[in-house]
Image 1 (spheres, one colour):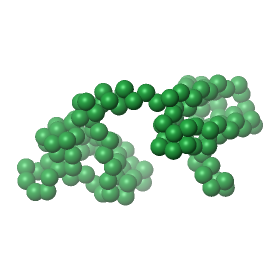
Image 2 (spheres, rainbow, N blue to C red):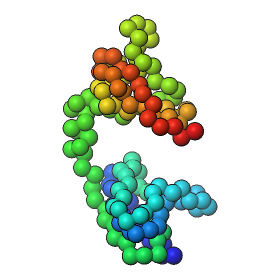
Image 3 (cartoon, one colour):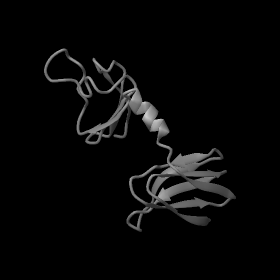
Image 4 (tube, rainbow, N blue to C red):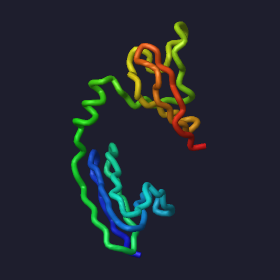
Length: 140
């Protein structure tokens, strides 16, 4: 297997294309954390808030590129009040009372909430004024 070592600077995107293989991170030097499997289609990873040493493991020809992150797509999301919220525990739906719903008055329909305690991802299916959080997936 050919192992390609790539340093991905903070706030950059790595795009890899190969017929087969894996892109992984090896933070402690003793185990692989697979970030993506390669199967012929282009895969993009990043941006990360700090530099990352990534590895591409494949037996076939590969192409990869590193590009600066274009924040204009995020600016377009934020202009529409679509946010990525992170918290510990299940998000609170709008109840017309106390407590306030998670993201109430802030997070428009389509905003995402990540529950770091339970490994669950939610999307706001309600409105900015009345958020209703729908589970999308669960890591546990």
